Length: 392
Image (tube, rainbow, N blue to C red; front, side):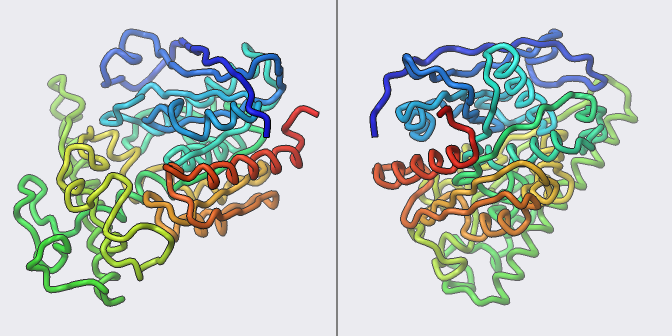
């Protein structure tokens, strides 16, 4: 395959919103303007009518292998940062969907592309499903905290296709499967139930875990998520009634990287490395500062992390995508996406125009796996050509 030369260009989108909810995150929106920053990969001497748009709720993806590999293959790529780039502590998923819509509109109306394909990598997968479901049939007028944010009036443009790749169910569902259920006191992580403290040598339950223990472990994880959700709702209501100017509060969620699958490779088996997660040693990251949902605000928890309330759950949104073609690429040895997640999305997708490809041995980032990355790119090119998304 010919490797194309390409240029990396900045993209800046600025807009104002007539919000009925108070923005509580820094200068992004609180001064009347929201500024989004992205990068545009443009192959030299190769104009195109289609752009492949990457977006993640909080990460910026312009340095990952796949966007650059697509540009190397001659495709135009747009890597998009949300208003919460590199900081998800106050992230509202409904606003991220709006931000994605701003990029799609900009790509068509300002950059001149006729077609936009969403490439939902990792956490961008459920975001792409969330956005597409709302673009096809918008329903959301409020955030899970009850704040007005009307996506039905946002004019979200439908994408021409979605590529769901190395992606999990959603932030809320994935976090819940990784929450440490041994926590008894949210304010004191040293107070734990030894029955579920699987990283402790004193835990009576050892791998390989019994099916009954795994079921109890999962029930306890969901219960912990619901306990935090109820607390966040109650505190928001308390703050509202106080009327003393305090409308939001930040908090820490301890021990959020704990999954029986990481210690027992017989549970939902795949090609993943045992006793490992994508951040490294699971015992270390469970208590480290970069674990999922470590820092959050009350509203953000309800929007992006609540198992029951988040609007961005993957299967629920996949079931509302009726018309958009979807290519789903599973990395079979993914150390960040559990093996059960891609089949769940495949089964939930309502669109009849869907395809599923599994790349055996591929890890989340294709680190040291150029042959698997090449297979991924070839899959994208083949599907895009068959769907009429590439220039002839």
